[in-house]
Amino acid sequence: MTSFHFKNQENLSLRQRVMSDIRNAIIQGHLKPGDKLRELDISQQMAISRGPIREALRDLEALGLVVSSPYRETTVADVSKGEVVDLLIPIRLQLEIHALKQKHSNWSETMYQSLRDIIDIMKSAADNGDLASLVEADIRFHEIVVSSEDSAYTQQIWSGIVNRLRLHFIKNTKLFTDLARVPAEHEELLIALQNEPFDRIEKLWTQHILQDDCLLCFHDDK
Amino acid sequence: MTSFHFKNQENLSLRQRVMSDIRNAIIQGHLKPGDKLRELDISQQMAISRGPIREALRDLEALGLVVSSPYRETTVADVSKGEVVDLLIPIRLQLEIHALKQKHSNWSETMYQSLRDIIDIMKSAADNGDLASLVEADIRFHEIVVSSEDSAYTQQIWSGIVNRLRLHFIKNTKLFTDLARVPAEHEELLIALQNEPFDRIEKLWTQHILQDDCLLCFHDDK
DNA sequence: GATCGATCGATTGTTGACAATCTTCAAAAC
DNA sequence: GTTTTGAAGATTGTCAACAATCGATCGATC
Image (tube, rainbow over all chains, first blue to last red; front, side, top):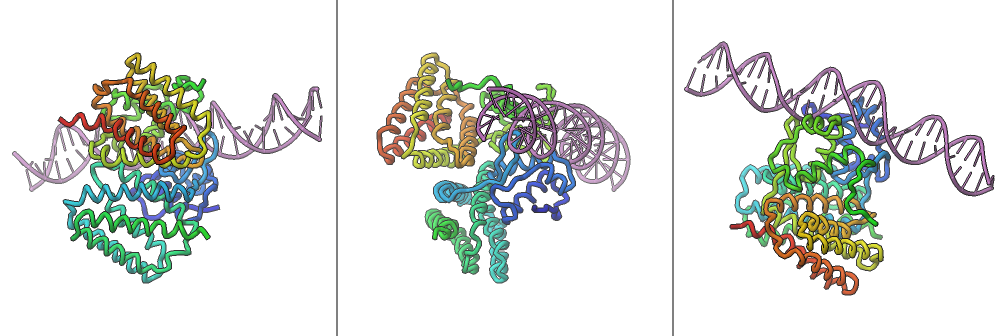
């Protein structure tokens, strides 16, 4: 049985904190596909009422991390390899390319700076062999590219897909042998963003995602 | 047999009924983008407590039909034309093509029959000039193709996208001049499904969706 | 011995009261 | 005249009790 604990998130609602905690427990592999999530258990462990737990579970269901049927317990979701390769990765790519196209003409300096900061985080994570932080930074990098004021729905779909991808990648964490390649490759992407024409960026980006994502899902074959 | 409108919602949970009611109100245009949805108002209007209302609103938010921020009221979402053309339609196409590819080898006779039934409904709707039923049947046709046991998440994304497309199409309902074309075209698709090789199906399907969806979103230009 | 049905415990669904937070608007300070 | 402050009202967030439903268990019947 996994125990949940709050981090420094005093300003967030309980629902958001619960959702974040359970999501992390799933993504870090403490909860595995098929594990049962009972509202009463969780509420007692966290010493709060069932209301926010229910809502958090519904949020996780919308993200595709959890499945539930009426009057029956909800369980941690599972992801098939076919879905990852044929659906999640292509859609993710399409979402990011679309975001890049929309932003191409008017990138702000502050956004470049955010990306640079993340690359720095990647570098130190790679030096320390901290795979978790590296993955986190990788996702954050792409999240910034996708983020947009005018259509929150885009980012909503993107988040769900990336979470689902992570759910699949938990199964094989022994990979990523060359950690230093991650910051190096993202640095290339950033430079291209600043200097190259769009079609070149599109090509690089496509290569990057197909390589990055498929790296993991193709290795568990043998 | 398969009553396609399930009016009798007595067996569903309140949350599902509320969600369905609000969704219909949005999709039918009774609620317009920007309209406020207050929990207390709705709960009094429906004579139930706020709990199921809250959960229904969260479900609608996950579907992209509603937006909300903490401690502030939730409102009906809006969709930009750029998002429809560059994002929703391509992703929808990708989802359906993927589903077609997966099912291509083992379609069941009951599924063909379901599609035939829907085409019949389309025909009578077209004869009666019943645009609402026609659209409903159109969506149901494609929903059956996307439906799948093993990955509910696929259909979840698809539903959100299609709902969001409808949200945009509400603005211009004066189109669809030739209603009879809708059942005819779906009949062609069904025949292809039964007889043609996959790449031919893929081509026809792509044509169909781009035409069908863009029909509406390109006309409100001027 | 197998099958059907009632009962019980466990779990989710619903409710109304209470708490926390945001917005508004008017009065005070500068 | 403009800005700040701080109540008041409205709205969402949280809680604990109660209701509805499901699955398993145990007998009764054949």
